[in-house]
Length: 225
Image (tube, rainbow, N blue to C red; front, side, top):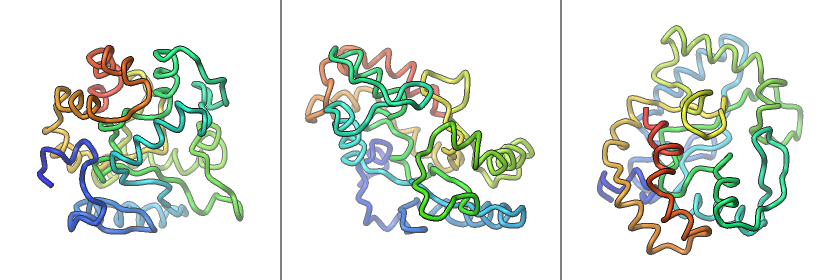
């Protein structure tokens, strides 16, 4: 697979570029930086734990299509389950509240991680990755992460889904190794993404193709940092 296609999630999870960490797949270029961040947080009393990492195009497409069909629940901006809109364009925007466009998800890069504090999780607790968790049980963890990032002591990791940037809801749990991700994002082409959609069985296809330029301005390019 050429570097030109990596940013769309079209890289085999068995690629030699990947390594398995805590049951998840990440780009091996970020492994040493992740371990350093984990060690630093451990000194502060936290257990950095992965909840998601690399997602191929097909997995993001599955999430998108299952939300569109109602198989997976839709959440409003507050993280509360909502009814499924019948209008295709409204449904598209409802999905985009918490789910990235297939082919434009930062999780395609292998450099972006969803993380929590394993020490704060009750036994048998199923993590939801919601604002309520970030402001509750994981609040001290995220406060410390913010301090490390602000002090430029987070080994290249930063948050990309933050208030005031684009239209995707803020996600404190999502961190990205920016020096590595930038190398892959240089190859992104909206025209290529359109071609991929035209050949893909994706829900809300007409709405996506009709609005793709605008969607890129609101949901893609603001997060290519």
